[in-house]
Length: 224
View: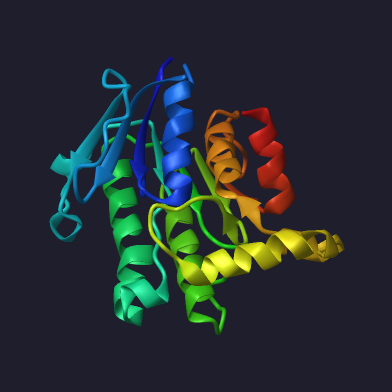
């Protein structure tokens, strides 16, 4: 049976690659991206569509019914400007969209989180990521695939000088992170996008919640 995808965060590094792989995959006959403003045409007009929405007033009527939700939305503390604004983008919006999506038919969710995510962490960033994971795990889902990458590598549409510098260092030192430290290795955003699609097309797991870190993400990406 054909699958349909709803994508949140389609303009970001991972989200854009996820959309590209969804459009290439014959298992999906429709890919809908929820966006704040209209973007560039994908060239796959019959299969892909953008739905421009106001995330501050999102209702079930704004959600295109789909089988799978891919959530790759995220920001930085610097761009958000405050903890409250960061929490809105990285927790409140994706959780609200997920609840509406489940109410309209979504059975599976793939989420981009972060290595070290923990709702009990003293680190605000990691605590917020962990709170979202825990909240999504309470939804009635057949599968919840949580990707926990470390630093993401790849070309972004927005400028992040700090991450650009960090990526150079990460590439140079990646081989030094061995054993239990491997999960902190930087990874290409394209691999995470590929892994999300591969995970969602795998048989529904038991338990539904599956955590994927560096090695697991790479293994999934290799299957896509």
